[in-house]
Length: 465
Image 1: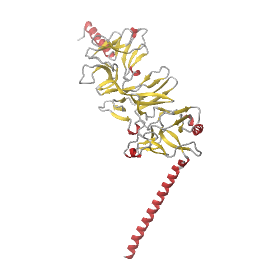
Image 2: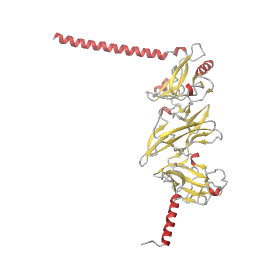
Image 3: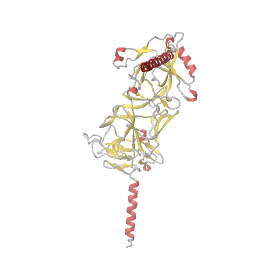
Image 4: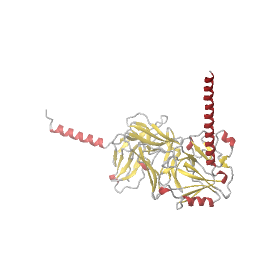
Protein backbone atom coordinates (compact mmCIF):
# COMPACT_ATOMS: atom_id res chain seq x y z
CA UNK A 1 0.00 0.00 0.00
CA UNK A 2 1.34 3.40 -0.95
CA UNK A 3 2.10 5.84 1.86
CA UNK A 4 0.10 9.08 1.89
CA UNK A 5 1.92 12.33 1.12
CA UNK A 6 1.57 13.72 4.68
CA UNK A 7 3.00 10.49 6.13
CA UNK A 8 5.90 10.60 3.66
CA UNK A 9 6.64 14.22 4.51
CA UNK A 10 6.50 13.48 8.25
CA UNK A 11 8.89 10.55 7.90
CA UNK A 12 11.24 12.62 5.78
CA UNK A 13 11.18 15.42 8.32
CA UNK A 14 11.87 13.02 11.19
CA UNK A 15 14.73 11.40 9.27
CA UNK A 16 16.25 14.79 8.55
CA UNK A 17 15.94 15.75 12.24
CA UNK A 18 17.63 12.51 13.33
CA UNK A 19 20.49 13.09 10.86
CA UNK A 20 20.90 16.62 12.18
CA UNK A 21 20.87 15.41 15.77
CA UNK A 22 23.44 12.69 15.09
CA UNK A 23 25.63 15.13 13.20
CA UNK A 24 25.55 17.60 16.11
CA UNK A 25 26.53 15.12 18.84
CA UNK A 26 30.14 16.38 18.84
CA UNK A 27 29.37 20.13 18.67
CA UNK A 28 27.81 22.99 20.62
CA UNK A 29 26.65 26.18 18.92
CA UNK A 30 26.42 29.60 20.56
CA UNK A 31 22.82 29.19 21.72
CA UNK A 32 23.26 25.60 22.92
CA UNK A 33 24.58 23.99 26.09
CA UNK A 34 25.09 20.60 27.68
CA UNK A 35 23.88 19.86 31.18
CA UNK A 36 25.46 17.64 33.81
CA UNK A 37 24.04 14.38 32.47
CA UNK A 38 24.65 15.15 28.79
CA UNK A 39 27.83 14.55 26.80
CA UNK A 40 29.54 15.27 23.52
CA UNK A 41 31.05 12.31 21.67
CA UNK A 42 33.69 12.61 18.95
CA UNK A 43 32.52 11.46 15.53
CA UNK A 44 34.65 8.29 15.61
CA UNK A 45 33.37 7.42 19.12
CA UNK A 46 36.88 7.59 20.65
CA UNK A 47 36.40 10.44 23.13
CA UNK A 48 33.59 11.79 25.26
CA UNK A 49 33.18 15.14 27.03
CA UNK A 50 30.96 15.76 30.02
CA UNK A 51 30.76 16.14 33.78
CA UNK A 52 32.18 13.47 36.09
CA UNK A 53 33.03 12.79 39.73
CA UNK A 54 36.47 11.21 40.30
CA UNK A 55 35.73 10.31 43.92
CA UNK A 56 32.92 8.14 45.25
CA UNK A 57 33.41 9.83 48.61
CA UNK A 58 32.66 13.26 47.11
CA UNK A 59 30.06 12.58 44.40
CA UNK A 60 28.83 16.18 44.49
CA UNK A 61 32.20 17.46 43.21
CA UNK A 62 31.71 17.61 39.46
CA UNK A 63 34.35 18.39 36.82
CA UNK A 64 34.09 19.00 33.09
CA UNK A 65 36.47 16.57 31.44
CA UNK A 66 37.34 14.53 28.37
CA UNK A 67 37.82 10.77 28.61
CA UNK A 68 38.07 7.73 26.38
CA UNK A 69 34.49 6.76 25.60
CA UNK A 70 35.13 3.08 26.26
CA UNK A 71 37.30 3.83 29.31
CA UNK A 72 35.51 6.57 31.24
CA UNK A 73 37.85 6.09 34.21
CA UNK A 74 40.78 7.38 32.09
CA UNK A 75 40.32 11.15 32.00
CA UNK A 76 42.73 12.95 29.65
CA UNK A 77 41.72 16.60 30.16
CA UNK A 78 39.89 18.66 32.78
CA UNK A 79 38.63 22.23 32.48
CA UNK A 80 37.84 23.25 36.06
CA UNK A 81 40.54 21.38 38.00
CA UNK A 82 40.66 23.85 40.88
CA UNK A 83 36.98 24.82 41.00
CA UNK A 84 34.58 21.86 40.92
CA UNK A 85 30.86 22.32 40.52
CA UNK A 86 29.47 21.29 43.90
CA UNK A 87 26.11 20.03 42.70
CA UNK A 88 24.66 18.20 39.71
CA UNK A 89 23.31 21.36 38.08
CA UNK A 90 26.44 22.38 36.17
CA UNK A 91 26.44 23.12 32.45
CA UNK A 92 28.76 23.99 29.58
CA UNK A 93 27.71 26.86 27.32
CA UNK A 94 28.95 29.86 25.37
CA UNK A 95 29.20 33.31 26.92
CA UNK A 96 28.16 36.38 24.95
CA UNK A 97 31.77 37.06 23.91
CA UNK A 98 32.17 33.62 22.31
CA UNK A 99 34.05 31.87 25.12
CA UNK A 100 33.14 28.49 26.54
CA UNK A 101 32.13 28.66 30.20
CA UNK A 102 31.29 26.16 32.91
CA UNK A 103 28.34 27.35 34.99
CA UNK A 104 27.24 26.10 38.39
CA UNK A 105 23.66 25.72 39.60
CA UNK A 106 23.30 29.47 40.23
CA UNK A 107 24.61 30.23 36.72
CA UNK A 108 27.84 31.69 38.07
CA UNK A 109 30.91 31.22 35.85
CA UNK A 110 33.46 28.94 37.52
CA UNK A 111 35.66 28.35 34.45
CA UNK A 112 36.16 30.08 31.10
CA UNK A 113 38.20 29.31 27.99
CA UNK A 114 39.32 32.96 28.21
CA UNK A 115 40.30 33.32 24.58
CA UNK A 116 40.24 36.70 22.88
CA UNK A 117 36.81 38.12 22.21
CA UNK A 118 35.36 36.86 18.95
CA UNK A 119 34.61 39.43 16.25
CA UNK A 120 31.43 37.53 15.37
CA UNK A 121 30.58 35.58 18.49
CA UNK A 122 27.39 34.25 16.93
CA UNK A 123 29.50 32.14 14.55
CA UNK A 124 31.34 30.34 17.37
CA UNK A 125 31.09 26.56 17.48
CA UNK A 126 32.71 24.16 19.95
CA UNK A 127 33.59 20.70 18.68
CA UNK A 128 35.13 17.59 20.22
CA UNK A 129 37.50 16.23 17.59
CA UNK A 130 38.46 12.60 17.02
CA UNK A 131 41.90 13.47 18.47
CA UNK A 132 40.36 14.32 21.85
CA UNK A 133 40.90 18.05 21.26
CA UNK A 134 38.05 20.40 22.21
CA UNK A 135 38.17 23.40 19.88
CA UNK A 136 36.31 26.67 19.39
CA UNK A 137 36.12 27.42 15.71
CA UNK A 138 35.22 30.38 13.54
CA UNK A 139 36.59 29.08 10.29
CA UNK A 140 39.86 28.36 12.15
CA UNK A 141 40.71 27.32 15.71
CA UNK A 142 40.36 30.24 18.11
CA UNK A 143 40.93 28.17 21.22
CA UNK A 144 41.80 24.52 21.85
CA UNK A 145 42.08 22.31 24.91
CA UNK A 146 45.36 20.90 23.54
CA UNK A 147 46.98 24.22 24.52
CA UNK A 148 46.10 23.59 28.16
CA UNK A 149 47.18 20.02 29.01
CA UNK A 150 46.24 18.40 32.30
CA UNK A 151 48.28 15.31 33.20
CA UNK A 152 48.10 13.56 29.82
CA UNK A 153 49.78 14.04 26.44
CA UNK A 154 47.82 12.77 23.43
CA UNK A 155 48.97 12.48 19.80
CA UNK A 156 49.13 15.99 18.35
CA UNK A 157 49.58 17.80 21.68
CA UNK A 158 52.66 19.97 22.27
CA UNK A 159 54.94 19.79 25.28
CA UNK A 160 57.34 22.73 25.41
CA UNK A 161 57.21 26.50 25.14
CA UNK A 162 56.64 29.44 22.85
CA UNK A 163 59.87 31.43 22.91
CA UNK A 164 58.18 34.62 21.72
CA UNK A 165 55.22 34.84 24.08
CA UNK A 166 56.56 32.72 26.94
CA UNK A 167 53.46 30.50 26.78
CA UNK A 168 54.19 26.97 28.00
CA UNK A 169 52.69 23.53 27.42
CA UNK A 170 53.31 21.52 30.60
CA UNK A 171 51.86 18.46 32.27
CA UNK A 172 50.69 18.74 35.88
CA UNK A 173 49.85 15.69 37.97
CA UNK A 174 46.64 15.16 39.92
CA UNK A 175 46.84 15.80 43.67
CA UNK A 176 45.85 12.17 44.26
CA UNK A 177 43.89 9.42 42.54
CA UNK A 178 40.54 10.93 43.50
CA UNK A 179 41.44 14.63 43.38
CA UNK A 180 42.27 16.16 39.96
CA UNK A 181 43.31 19.52 41.38
CA UNK A 182 46.90 20.60 40.74
CA UNK A 183 49.30 18.05 42.21
CA UNK A 184 52.92 18.23 43.32
CA UNK A 185 54.60 17.24 40.05
CA UNK A 186 55.17 19.16 36.82
CA UNK A 187 56.74 18.05 33.56
CA UNK A 188 58.14 21.12 31.85
CA UNK A 189 60.92 22.62 29.75
CA UNK A 190 63.74 24.73 31.06
CA UNK A 191 66.17 26.53 28.79
CA UNK A 192 69.43 27.37 30.52
CA UNK A 193 71.98 27.37 27.73
CA UNK A 194 70.32 24.35 26.14
CA UNK A 195 66.79 23.01 26.62
CA UNK A 196 66.15 20.26 29.12
CA UNK A 197 62.95 18.51 30.15
CA UNK A 198 62.39 18.19 33.88
CA UNK A 199 59.99 16.59 36.29
CA UNK A 200 59.81 18.90 39.28
CA UNK A 201 58.29 18.51 42.72
CA UNK A 202 57.72 22.13 43.48
CA UNK A 203 61.11 23.55 42.48
CA UNK A 204 63.09 20.42 43.29
CA UNK A 205 64.37 18.39 40.35
CA UNK A 206 63.12 14.82 40.52
CA UNK A 207 64.00 13.74 37.00
CA UNK A 208 65.99 15.27 34.19
CA UNK A 209 64.62 13.56 31.17
CA UNK A 210 66.57 10.59 29.94
CA UNK A 211 64.18 10.37 27.00
CA UNK A 212 66.08 11.30 23.87
CA UNK A 213 63.59 13.86 22.69
CA UNK A 214 64.29 16.26 25.55
CA UNK A 215 67.98 17.10 25.40
CA UNK A 216 68.72 18.94 22.17
CA UNK A 217 72.03 17.83 20.66
CA UNK A 218 71.51 19.49 17.28
CA UNK A 219 69.75 16.48 15.78
CA UNK A 220 67.21 15.59 18.42
CA UNK A 221 66.61 15.91 22.12
CA UNK A 222 69.08 13.38 23.47
CA UNK A 223 70.37 12.00 26.69
CA UNK A 224 68.13 8.99 26.99
CA UNK A 225 68.24 5.28 26.65
CA UNK A 226 67.55 4.28 23.03
CA UNK A 227 63.85 3.67 22.63
CA UNK A 228 61.82 3.37 19.47
CA UNK A 229 58.41 2.07 18.59
CA UNK A 230 56.58 1.44 15.32
CA UNK A 231 53.41 2.68 17.01
CA UNK A 232 54.21 6.39 17.02
CA UNK A 233 56.43 8.98 15.40
CA UNK A 234 58.17 11.57 17.62
CA UNK A 235 58.30 15.12 16.27
CA UNK A 236 60.84 17.69 17.50
CA UNK A 237 60.57 21.37 16.72
CA UNK A 238 63.25 23.88 17.72
CA UNK A 239 63.34 27.29 16.09
CA UNK A 240 63.35 30.94 17.09
CA UNK A 241 59.66 30.89 17.96
CA UNK A 242 58.95 27.49 19.49
CA UNK A 243 60.57 24.56 21.20
CA UNK A 244 58.40 21.51 21.72
CA UNK A 245 57.96 17.77 21.48
CA UNK A 246 54.90 16.02 20.17
CA UNK A 247 54.13 12.61 18.74
CA UNK A 248 51.86 11.18 16.07
CA UNK A 249 50.27 7.76 16.08
CA UNK A 250 51.42 5.64 13.13
CA UNK A 251 48.92 2.86 13.75
CA UNK A 252 45.32 4.02 13.97
CA UNK A 253 44.26 0.70 15.44
CA UNK A 254 46.23 1.53 18.61
CA UNK A 255 45.48 4.19 21.23
CA UNK A 256 48.49 5.90 22.83
CA UNK A 257 48.77 8.33 25.73
CA UNK A 258 51.55 9.65 27.96
CA UNK A 259 50.64 10.45 31.55
CA UNK A 260 52.31 12.09 34.55
CA UNK A 261 50.82 10.47 37.64
CA UNK A 262 50.44 11.74 41.19
CA UNK A 263 53.70 10.09 42.33
CA UNK A 264 55.81 11.82 39.66
CA UNK A 265 56.06 8.85 37.28
CA UNK A 266 55.74 9.55 33.55
CA UNK A 267 54.46 6.61 31.49
CA UNK A 268 53.60 5.76 27.89
CA UNK A 269 50.51 3.58 27.61
CA UNK A 270 49.15 1.71 24.58
CA UNK A 271 45.88 -0.06 23.90
CA UNK A 272 44.85 -1.91 20.73
CA UNK A 273 41.44 -0.61 19.68
CA UNK A 274 38.90 -3.07 20.93
CA UNK A 275 41.31 -4.16 23.67
CA UNK A 276 40.40 -4.14 27.35
CA UNK A 277 43.69 -3.39 29.12
CA UNK A 278 46.28 -0.64 28.75
CA UNK A 279 49.96 -1.65 28.76
CA UNK A 280 52.82 0.58 29.94
CA UNK A 281 55.53 0.76 27.25
CA UNK A 282 57.86 2.91 29.31
CA UNK A 283 57.93 4.53 32.76
CA UNK A 284 60.31 7.21 34.04
CA UNK A 285 62.13 7.78 36.23
CA UNK A 286 63.69 4.38 36.75
CA UNK A 287 66.18 3.93 39.59
CA UNK A 288 69.04 5.07 37.34
CA UNK A 289 67.09 8.11 36.14
CA UNK A 290 66.28 9.65 39.51
CA UNK A 291 67.93 13.04 39.53
CA UNK A 292 71.47 13.01 40.93
CA UNK A 293 71.00 9.50 42.30
CA UNK A 294 74.75 8.78 42.36
CA UNK A 295 75.70 12.12 43.88
CA UNK A 296 78.25 14.64 42.54
CA UNK A 297 80.76 13.08 40.11
CA UNK A 298 79.01 9.72 40.28
CA UNK A 299 77.83 7.82 37.22
CA UNK A 300 74.87 5.47 37.02
CA UNK A 301 75.08 2.24 35.02
CA UNK A 302 71.82 0.31 35.22
CA UNK A 303 73.45 -2.94 34.09
CA UNK A 304 76.00 -2.91 36.95
CA UNK A 305 75.69 -3.93 40.57
CA UNK A 306 75.90 -1.65 42.40
CA UNK A 307 74.60 0.75 39.77
CA UNK A 308 76.56 3.78 41.02
CA UNK A 309 80.29 4.26 40.51
CA UNK A 310 82.67 7.19 40.63
CA UNK A 311 83.88 8.53 37.30
CA UNK A 312 87.53 7.85 36.48
CA UNK A 313 89.97 9.60 38.80
CA UNK A 314 87.43 9.93 41.62
CA UNK A 315 86.71 7.97 44.82
CA UNK A 316 83.69 7.96 47.17
CA UNK A 317 83.55 10.95 49.49
CA UNK A 318 82.26 8.64 52.23
CA UNK A 319 83.13 4.98 51.69
CA UNK A 320 81.00 3.95 54.68
CA UNK A 321 77.93 5.48 53.03
CA UNK A 322 78.70 3.84 49.71
CA UNK A 323 79.12 0.48 51.46
CA UNK A 324 75.43 0.66 52.46
CA UNK A 325 74.40 1.86 48.96
CA UNK A 326 73.92 5.48 49.97
CA UNK A 327 75.55 7.41 47.13
CA UNK A 328 74.20 10.87 47.93
CA UNK A 329 77.57 12.23 49.10
CA UNK A 330 79.07 11.49 45.69
CA UNK A 331 82.73 11.38 44.78
CA UNK A 332 85.89 13.48 45.08
CA UNK A 333 89.12 13.47 43.11
CA UNK A 334 91.87 11.08 44.13
CA UNK A 335 94.42 13.67 43.01
CA UNK A 336 93.26 17.31 42.98
CA UNK A 337 93.76 19.22 39.75
CA UNK A 338 96.11 22.16 39.86
CA UNK A 339 96.56 23.26 36.26
CA UNK A 340 99.68 21.09 36.17
CA UNK A 341 101.54 20.04 33.05
CA UNK A 342 100.44 16.73 31.68
CA UNK A 343 96.77 17.06 32.59
CA UNK A 344 94.51 15.73 29.87
CA UNK A 345 91.16 14.13 29.18
CA UNK A 346 89.60 10.68 29.18
CA UNK A 347 86.51 9.94 27.10
CA UNK A 348 83.32 8.72 28.73
CA UNK A 349 81.04 7.49 25.95
CA UNK A 350 77.30 7.05 25.41
CA UNK A 351 76.20 9.32 28.23
CA UNK A 352 73.39 11.46 29.34
CA UNK A 353 75.57 14.53 29.81
CA UNK A 354 75.76 16.20 33.24
CA UNK A 355 73.17 18.74 34.22
CA UNK A 356 73.82 22.32 33.16
CA UNK A 357 74.42 23.76 36.61
CA UNK A 358 77.83 25.49 36.44
CA UNK A 359 78.75 25.67 32.78
CA UNK A 360 79.54 27.88 29.81
CA UNK A 361 78.38 27.53 26.21
CA UNK A 362 80.09 28.74 23.05
CA UNK A 363 78.33 27.62 19.88
CA UNK A 364 81.11 28.92 17.64
CA UNK A 365 83.89 26.60 18.83
CA UNK A 366 84.87 23.19 17.51
CA UNK A 367 85.92 20.29 19.72
CA UNK A 368 89.67 21.05 19.58
CA UNK A 369 89.08 24.68 20.52
CA UNK A 370 86.80 23.52 23.31
CA UNK A 371 89.56 21.29 24.69
CA UNK A 372 92.06 24.16 24.71
CA UNK A 373 89.52 26.45 26.37
CA UNK A 374 88.98 23.90 29.14
CA UNK A 375 92.73 23.52 29.74
CA UNK A 376 93.06 27.31 30.10
CA UNK A 377 90.47 27.34 32.90
CA UNK A 378 91.83 25.71 36.06
CA UNK A 379 88.25 25.16 37.30
CA UNK A 380 87.10 23.38 34.13
CA UNK A 381 86.11 19.79 34.90
CA UNK A 382 84.92 18.49 31.53
CA UNK A 383 83.80 19.47 28.05
CA UNK A 384 81.62 18.18 25.21
CA UNK A 385 80.12 19.13 21.87
CA UNK A 386 76.83 20.98 22.15
CA UNK A 387 75.76 20.09 18.59
CA UNK A 388 76.12 16.84 16.64
CA UNK A 389 75.42 18.22 13.19
CA UNK A 390 78.09 18.15 10.45
CA UNK A 391 80.47 16.10 12.55
CA UNK A 392 79.91 17.99 15.78
CA UNK A 393 80.38 21.55 16.92
CA UNK A 394 79.78 23.96 19.74
CA UNK A 395 81.44 23.87 23.13
CA UNK A 396 80.03 23.03 26.54
CA UNK A 397 82.37 23.49 29.51
CA UNK A 398 81.53 22.27 33.01
CA UNK A 399 83.01 23.89 36.10
CA UNK A 400 83.01 22.14 39.46
CA UNK A 401 81.02 18.99 40.25
CA UNK A 402 79.28 16.95 37.57
CA UNK A 403 75.68 16.12 38.47
CA UNK A 404 73.29 13.47 37.12
CA UNK A 405 75.38 11.41 34.67
CA UNK A 406 74.15 8.15 33.23
CA UNK A 407 75.89 5.68 30.93
CA UNK A 408 73.92 3.46 28.58
CA UNK A 409 74.78 -0.11 27.73
CA UNK A 410 73.47 0.28 24.17
CA UNK A 411 75.46 2.32 21.67
CA UNK A 412 73.28 5.20 20.56
CA UNK A 413 73.28 8.83 19.55
CA UNK A 414 74.02 9.94 23.11
CA UNK A 415 77.11 12.04 23.56
CA UNK A 416 80.72 11.70 24.68
CA UNK A 417 82.02 13.60 27.67
CA UNK A 418 85.70 14.53 27.91
CA UNK A 419 86.66 14.41 31.58
CA UNK A 420 89.72 16.29 32.81
CA UNK A 421 92.16 14.12 34.78
CA UNK A 422 95.74 14.38 36.10
CA UNK A 423 98.56 12.76 34.15
CA UNK A 424 98.52 9.74 36.47
CA UNK A 425 95.09 8.77 35.12
CA UNK A 426 95.96 9.08 31.44
CA UNK A 427 96.38 5.75 29.74
CA UNK A 428 95.01 4.01 32.82
CA UNK A 429 92.22 2.35 30.88
CA UNK A 430 94.70 1.00 28.35
CA UNK A 431 96.90 -0.33 31.16
CA UNK A 432 93.91 -1.97 32.80
CA UNK A 433 92.82 -3.56 29.53
CA UNK A 434 96.38 -4.77 28.89
CA UNK A 435 96.50 -6.26 32.38
CA UNK A 436 93.09 -7.89 31.89
CA UNK A 437 94.29 -9.33 28.58
CA UNK A 438 97.47 -10.69 30.20
CA UNK A 439 95.40 -12.30 32.96
CA UNK A 440 93.05 -13.88 30.42
CA UNK A 441 95.96 -15.21 28.34
CA UNK A 442 97.78 -16.60 31.40
CA UNK A 443 94.58 -18.20 32.68
CA UNK A 444 93.85 -19.77 29.30
CA UNK A 445 97.39 -21.10 28.84
CA UNK A 446 97.46 -22.41 32.43
CA UNK A 447 94.16 -24.15 31.88
CA UNK A 448 95.42 -25.76 28.68
CA UNK A 449 98.60 -26.96 30.45
CA UNK A 450 96.61 -28.46 33.33
CA UNK A 451 94.22 -30.11 30.87
CA UNK A 452 97.18 -31.51 28.88
CA UNK A 453 98.74 -32.99 32.04
CA UNK A 454 95.42 -34.63 32.92
CA UNK A 455 95.15 -36.22 29.48
CA UNK A 456 98.81 -37.31 29.63
CA UNK A 457 98.24 -38.90 33.04
CA UNK A 458 95.17 -40.81 31.84
CA UNK A 459 96.99 -42.11 28.75
CA UNK A 460 100.01 -43.16 30.84
CA UNK A 461 97.85 -45.15 33.28
CA UNK A 462 96.17 -46.97 30.41
CA UNK A 463 99.58 -47.94 28.94
CA UNK A 464 100.74 -49.33 32.31
CA UNK A 465 97.68 -51.57 32.43
